[in-house]
Image (tube, rainbow, N blue to C red; front, side, top):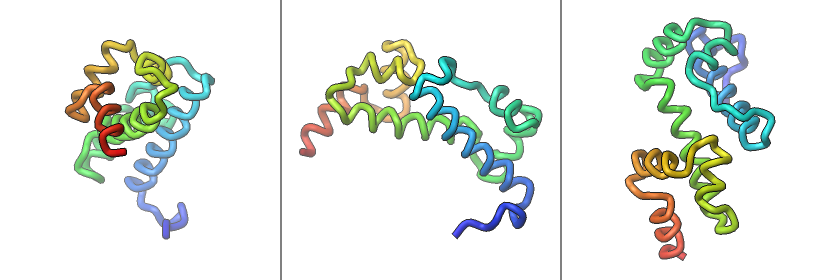
Length: 126
């Protein structure tokens, strides 16, 4: 059970607001309300704090860089989109604001598989 907002310390509040902002922003990207992926400075501006402060608070609070949470969420969504064969890899890349060749490199960096290899591994499981 999550604590009510008034019981959160400031670090936890910033972290939870950051996670909520990631979810909202990615939803905006996927629905076409926004065309450009936020950078850390954009997230900080939305939260009305300095980018360095945002980064430091999240690193101290979680032990991980803020980008870790952003990338983790994007990978989850990419994997979900790739599960539907109706979505081409290029379409998935564009939905997530990537150039298709950069998307493949990015995906492979995090998953140690290309999007195509990921799809083949899903087919082999079924």
